[in-house]
Image (cartoon, rainbow, N blue to C red):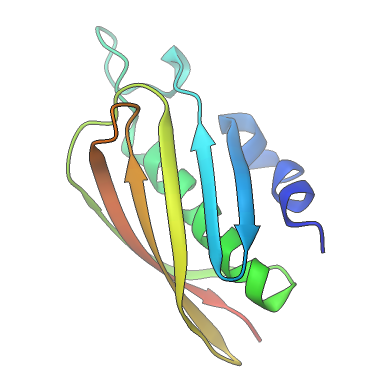
Length: 127
């Protein structure tokens, strides 16, 4: 499965501009270019929480897809927002567990200045 192509063709990720940059061996990285339409604040570009969540979920899924070579629907995701997401966003994900029925992935999301703005744990269906 061509992981990058699979995620590039995902309509919602494409709408937001989520890019999966790398996905192999249970690790994935991705980015999102911040723009006015993704901000929750009219006076300053600050990523809406849903944008940060979508980046984390997409990159987390890509990390697991790199292990199981098939789509992995999200079962659950928990996210902690730690700081405002200003500038372009970047995410790194690592598989914690890859089982026959479910997989678990940890994801960190950073702002352009390398501030950790969110950490998440996603649970995905693998079987």
